[in-house]
Image (cartoon, rainbow, N blue to C red; front, top):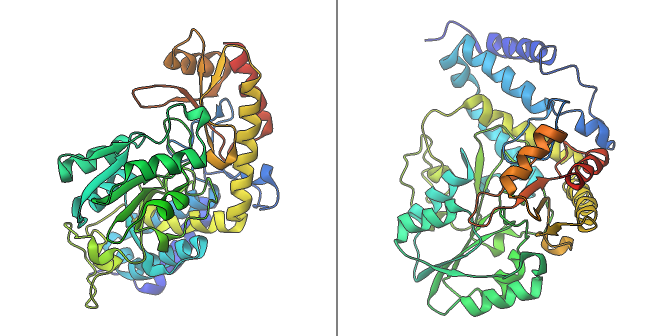
Length: 404
């Protein structure tokens, strides 16, 4: 049994927070949500590289770094005592912050460690009446989760040339691919392999029939785009929160209003509810990386302060600047559509005569531009315009690509 009282634990946690704020996480100026340079300064990225790959695995803004450190010190000082004293309160704080940011009831959420875990748990336990259908463009985790669960599933192609993808074209392709016997449709909000943003709402409205479930991988839309995703029109949205949101690494969510009774849990929960199917009963139990899970509240609150629509517009503006510049360069083929109706924060392109891996290596080592290669059969150079870059970074990236 802990020798510390609840009051001592709270005092210790507060002291740890002060210490964290004075440590290596930096003496960043106080956040001014109206000033994008102030927002950029909240991220602790090294200054010797321009980071266009930080959306792959989050860089934490200062409030999140400080919260992680605060909880870590409390757990290191008295692990069982800290959990016992704070778990219920901090779990609820995360739920409330997520609900405030996404404008939905706190009971809508279960939390996992990643998009892949969330997709695996959802597809592994979902009750489906009919054939499962996905698209050809989904990430490996969607396809493999469906294969493990159903052995076989059908794939629909939404576009041939991503640069020419349109809302109407993707809706018509989905209508042609969904049948009366389709019981599950897997969609992805933003395709990480091409940067195409899928009109999830329009597709759902066009193809859904009674009894058909719609599950969305939303990881590259969450906090990068403000497309109206009405969760009551879908069944489940799964997303990692350690990408565009800047949430703690190793965190993710499963979001649903009405599908919990159709999601059969197969990991025991530690906090069962006697009131029937709910996110509480589905939420995987076990001991987690509590300092990261609980710091998720600061990530949601950080973006709530900035404003969901303002962040989306900022990312869209930077992405447009990047795409327009790339389109003017010789030997560059833009893969991501120019229109913000069908694109978000990811920009993919090809360099004539240069394979993507070599281009990414040269961008980093010759020009200090950190990019990534799309992990798909058709690889492209990929840049992401998150809140940790600005107009100067975009212009430097364009100059570097021009020199390849």
